[in-house]
Length: 207
Ligand SMILES: NC(=O)c1ccc[n+]([C@@H]2O[C@H](COP(=O)([O-])OP(=O)(O)OC[C@H]3O[C@@H](n4cnc5c(N)ncnc54)[C@H](OP(=O)(O)O)[C@@H]3O)[C@@H](O)[C@H]2O)c1
Image (cartoon, rainbow, N blue to C red; front, side, top):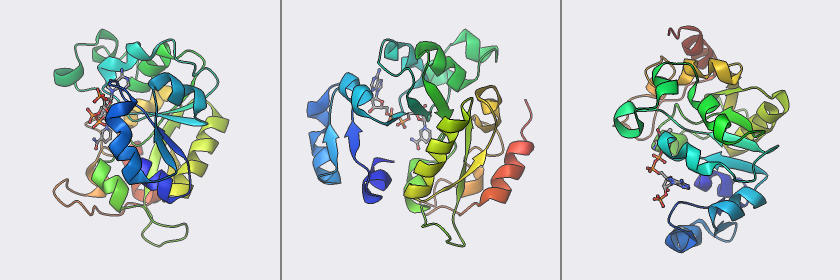
């Protein structure tokens, strides 16, 4: 995502759990629009925040200054990696509702979770391209979803509105829209999937 964002002219602030020193090489590779920072610095600085960390680490974000900010959540709950997390095992919360619990007031939008990172990089296309792909987004704030749609458009993707955060299960692991529309993982180039197949896959999801 950082590579696509930099290529589209956005400034990117990278952070991780180990600290900015471990991200200097990546920031340098990304060029002058990218810099490495602490999590707090990134959270404070960014207009739009991307949270792309293991779901089990979400509670550790609590206290970050993200109230009122658009927060894009890429997370997928895999019990063998993240669990057990009772709220997710019982399906009383969707993954992004679970993130929201640690970030009260944040305008969380679930996005990018259903596409493998190499496909994300390789399937980006300019507006109007016949083979442009779409990504589903789920969120409770119409303005936050509009901001994310605009951002996705800038980095090479269309958007399909999948509804509020409570409907985010429609794009969680195991659903028709999860990974499959963009082709097998061993084909790194991926298969374009426009709005229609993404909409159909969301509608076909069953709990
Ligand atoms: N990989 C994909 O293609 C893909 C696609 C869609 C969705 N997702 C989902 O996105 C999430 C992240 O996946 P990933 O593949 O990027 O995982 P990953 O390679 O394990 O990366 C996790 C990143 O999160 C950082 N991190 C972990 N805990 C943190 C914390 N408390 N604060 C700040 N940074 C923290 C790690 O930094 P350190 O190394 O410094 O700990 C690392 O940079 C998962 O839920 C995954 O299912 C992944």
